[in-house]
Image (cartoon, rainbow, N blue to C red; front, side, top):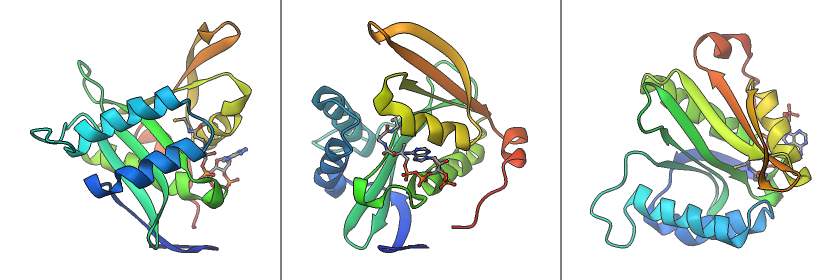
Length: 180
Ligand SMILES: CC(C)(COP(=O)(O)OP(=O)(O)OC[C@H]1O[C@@H](n2cnc3c(N)ncnc32)[C@H](O)[C@@H]1OP(=O)(O)O)[C@@H](O)C(=O)NCCC(=O)NCCS
């Protein structure tokens, strides 16, 4: 449990009952188009077994950061199919009211701990070069992720796909964990 100006928070796996709060959180960051929120919710449904899905899909792990009854942040990650020890971080987001307080940093540390526990050796994520993603890029770079590739004009003309990655173990040792 970590203290923030808005109260104590804790990181936990997301459950089917978190769907509405997750939808609201993703929509209100302003970083995702409605279609991207829909995709995230579809992935959430299969990842946590919502809506009669036979079983939770082990390729998608959803975690959240709770502050009281509120959902302050979320992340989705999982093993990348057809790889040996590579994991994708598909989404990470912090509700506007909670940004700048270390929520995403705490979520990412939890993700990295889980990836190490599952013998992962590489975490990969993607973002766009559009100005709206400045915070995301700054966040990833601050956590030791490096630009691995650029696909020019991927999202639209002038908006590139940036692929960032970080090797586990050795690179983690190089980044001192900041006390929250
Ligand atoms: C990117 C995002 C997840 C960061 O969440 P956050 O909880 O505010 O981040 P933290 O408080 O944990 O910040 C950790 C570090 O990231 C960097 N950072 C975070 N937001 C930043 C910003 N707006 N500008 C510059 N650096 C930033 C800082 O280096 C910060 O370290 P510091 O606290 O020592 O200064 C948040 O801005 C967000 O939800 N954005 C919209 C969704 C998104 O783009 N997600 C990523 C693609 S899936």
